[in-house]
Image (cartoon, rainbow, N blue to C red; front, side, top):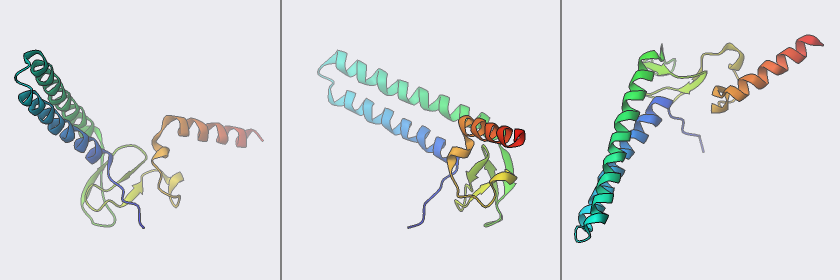
Length: 130
């Protein structure tokens, strides 16, 4: 079974959209408990906080998206945005990298972590000192 990759921008947008629906669901629970005013108010406030947090996440990913590197996917020939060293196409979900050192390696999102970069830098320094 082939792994299904997704771009980071799409993952974060999906998370923000799910927060909107969770907020509406929590508010709906508030309507169901309208006989207990304090509980209804708590559900409404929690639902509103979910929706406000969703707005913050949408704003944040929008700002990130403007700084993301835009490339043309070699598989589908559509422009896509990449965050980090490895990502997937937003359209065809083809994994790719912009780092020449990672070409030919198995796709793994750990390549984007700072810990992995430090680890690789330390390996290169120890190899160079030998």
